[in-house]
Length: 174
Image 1: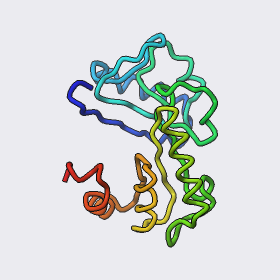
Image 2: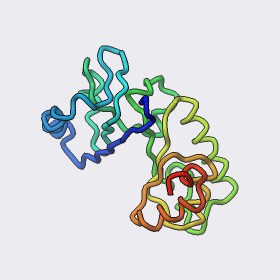
Image 3: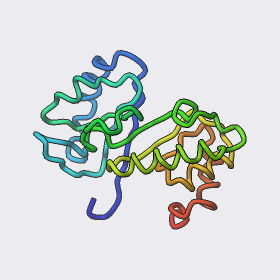
Image 4: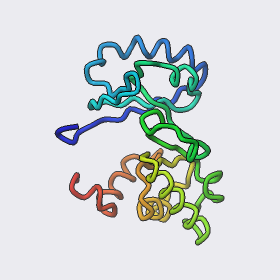
């Protein structure tokens, strides 16, 4: 965006992705002038990006000629040639992706896998998000040090305060 401000709304569809998509598209119409979209292969950069997670209606979204939303990718989507505007975000649970839940932090092998996953994700022009990990400063430190873009949490106040003190990307926003 020209002023550098944007908002990503991650919607977690719990079931019936195709039905949810139909309802969602009608609800999004009033926001149309502000929605980031891809129209016939051309990306139109606008300040609000909608990303669908969970029970994603992949086929329906992929086939849209005028797509005002995107899909939350999975680790297995990396290297498959999907355009970044279709899968701008890759989300992973820590245990399947790194082989640990990270209760006391990450061991050396998990750290190596994490760094590699961040590198591969960023090389494809996507952001990486983790969820389903231990809520600990040691885990947060590993994720921040590796360059993970988004951290899922059930403790937003605690994480926000910690990030303002420990993540250089957040210090200017305190």
